[in-house]
Image 1 (tube, rainbow, N blue to C red):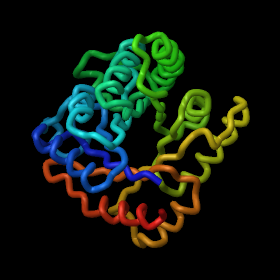
Image 2: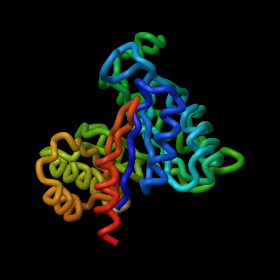
Image 3: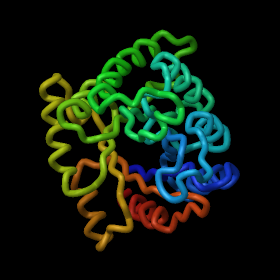
Image 4: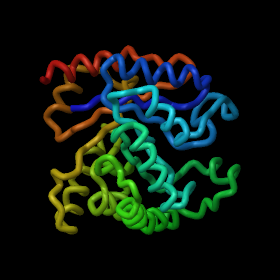
Length: 256
């Protein structure tokens, strides 16, 4: 079981974000994620915000143990070949700790303000389907190669396309821990069967909204009983409160 800190890169100075990343590692988190947007997703819409991938290069230098990545990278914002090279480079800076999170994109303001074609959910998903094999091909051609096989994480629960792409290309799948999770997991397992892949090859990652948790003991028992490999907890600036992070890390340690 891994515990991930999802540090929302908004409403804070970069010094505050960097210190939160360092604190999460020192606390015992296994993974630190940011997100790939250009404007805040909540709070003051024009508040402070920073770009994701340049931030990952910094995190690669100021941390030494945790995995790092975007939850998730928007496929629309970068050429797939360039993204593969960026991922390989950050993987080397971090000595093999990058997770390549990928998604089709959804936040329309990012597209409008930065001049990307928003298209439709279908066109964005089709673009992701085209990008995934391109990323794999470019990654295999890069010199030097990545330090390790960079795990690909795909986020989302679209049953016809997103979970199919996950079955074909991903090492990890991320979705919210909620009433839909078991059904979505079953759909992913069926897609794995359809494409000839062992479902056990794909680790399950879940995001937990701690504000909605009524009984932590019951939650921990359910997570342990399910095939969950990673639990992600989000926190935003400027304070980056991590009280619940410690609770989950203590639970994780109790499983050893």
